[in-house]
Image 1 (spheres, helix red, strand yellow):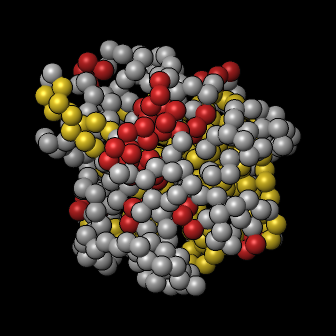
Image 2 (image 1 turned 135 degrees about the vertical axis):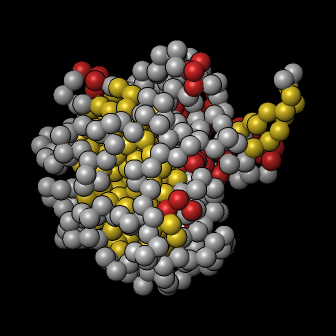
Length: 441
């Protein structure tokens, strides 16, 4: 079955992986481009500010072998760490955030990101980051704290080839196989990309056209894929956001629908009859083998068993912040999910500006950090951001929000022309569709 194609792009030529052409940049810190500057105050001025003691739209989440929780605090352009053994999560900034949004490869204290989203840990313990608005894949070395750009030339587009020259379009998810190859959800290009350990970027699956089609990687089609995960056998799992499906890719890149009938809705049961609404985050539980899904549009956390049955793990379907048992706990636009070695589930609860934990033994959901309010150093260091902007942005699915964020208008002020981000409140002035139930494209 093939959906109607609404858009396509060919910004670059498909490149074939070649060891002879490989040029690894994993250990290289590149100078910051002169033309690429932070959109907020300078890093020197921002360093004097206290980092916000809370989240501003957390997006991605992962857990390392020691149980440390890493979260991409997208609105604050940083990565933070949590430990659920401590009251209030022992919340700390791990990388970025002090200089606002921008790009800078440097020590974690000085590095800059622009809307980081998906996270994963590679086999060597490096934190891999989908730096969405920089259209790049970044890495943090835990030994020296160095942040480097693994792939992406910082230009929006599409191009395979050497990692330093490759182009992405709003990458939102990353996952690694046991060899250290990185699989990237290139959402704006409707593709799954692969960054090899040799430093070459190739297209693993997807034609670049928005649609739906299973089959060999070169013919497979996606609709703004969101999250990605891998298992021990080398399979790649994709939350196909716009198609309301969960897909699986073999180690050869062959795509198959694992769950979801393609209709937006909510239904548990047999995998191919189940229904989702804009699934985003996805993780494979190392203890049970279940595929954990952040059902973003339905406000649920779901699971797909190895036997092919979809069930609801937690959620009421109401966009609220409530802890408790399975049918008492509520979420608000859950974006990212991760599992620890014991099978506990961690959720980046985007709309609630919180990180939640679902206990594997009791089924109880608790909030590790977050109170439903956004915290931002740009608005009020260490305090609530509040304001209509956060409320408006919460109403827009993340891919739609990315599209709005990429549309800017010029406005004259006393200081001259400035870029102004188009939000839902102002979107109608520019003819931008901003309905929460519509996919962008």
